[in-house]
Length: 190
Image (cartoon, rainbow, N blue to C red; front, side):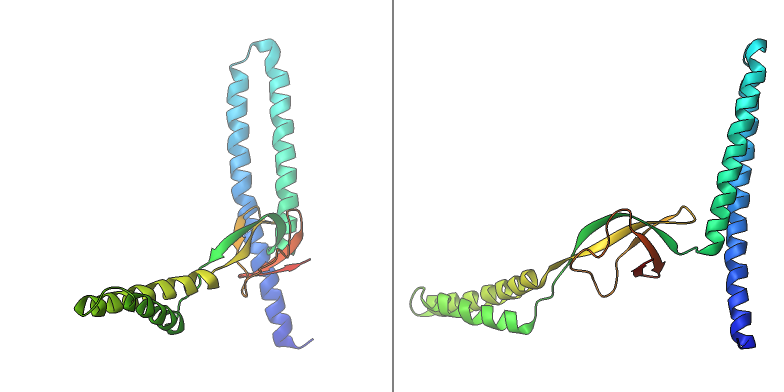
């Protein structure tokens, strides 16, 4: 392996490990605070129940620390890996164009020309063209609107992200429970 590539690979591993350590340290601080609060609550129990309460608090703290260590290891291995929580549709608004406006304007003008005589006919023709142009533009916008899928993913570090892949998925590619790897707005199966 080339030295530059190896150095870059090691740097990525160190960054992932540093982030995993930071997350673990934050979790440990919360676990310690919860343990102290539990011990305080145990001190308020009747004397006969205090020892059992303290054992339960210690057991809970140790289990939480074990889970935090496992999470730290998982984070260090693949911070961008996770599980799909849900696949939901969203709307990608279509865009109208001059073609839709022109077609609508022509149709509106033809309909407007059927109304009245003289100046009234001219006004109706112009109004029909304007209304038709707007309607044609909006109709094309509506026709080009499409549904796409976005995915809510719970990452290995516990964070939840919403991914809208580019290009958009018009058919669901993943379902809840699928294991995936996320890279920006790209998502792939693991």
